Amino acid sequence: MTDLPEITGSDRQSSSGTSRSLLERARADDAAAWDRLVGLYAPLVLHWCRCRGLQEPDVADVFQEVFLAVATHIGGFRKRQPGDTFRGWLRTITSNKVLDHFRRRQRHPGGVGGSEALDRLTLLPAPLSIDEGSIAEVQAERGLFHRALELVRGEFEPHTWQAFWKTAVEGRMANDVAADLGMSAGAVRVAKSRVLHRLREELRDLLE
Image (cartoon, rainbow, N blue to C red; front, side):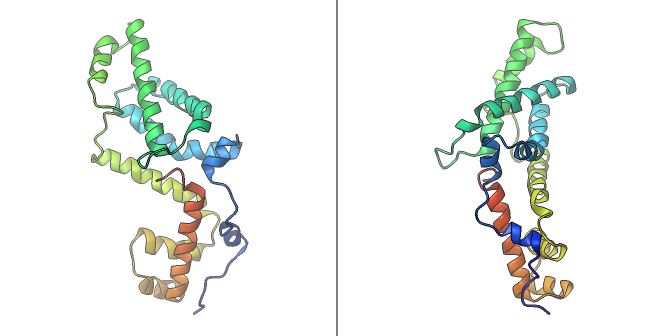
């Protein structure tokens, strides 16, 4: 068995310490970074919108408003306090846009909802009426984690990724995984560390 997994071209790229995070690239108006950012968070925003009672035609409109606001204000997003997170910031924007939607419906009643729906929303605790412990919310958060993993998966060779997945995600011991993959336990630990480092490098200011 080899002591270390082979470092291929894609794995060397992933170990670079000089690349900017996804959020930093999005702030710099990098189109590819924006595509990745939207792909990462779009299902979570859609989940939040539906949890607030929006109908499907309205979900699409509010979704566009949310990411337009993100694009407009992302340069000003900063973690000024320990509890500040990008996800929390995005959740607040979503909440505000949903409330704006129902206020517009109140001013122009004609669809389903109107002032009664707005009244219900304004009585809910800020920022969103989502039970943090609900199965749906847990699944939505888990989906975010798995999408984050998919953003960097293509940068690693299959055996490196398998070593990471079996230890970090499945929770198996390095010795057991080493036997399965024909690697040493040390190589498995290095592979896990390499992927985790890359994940933190790419998403350090998005997933905390």
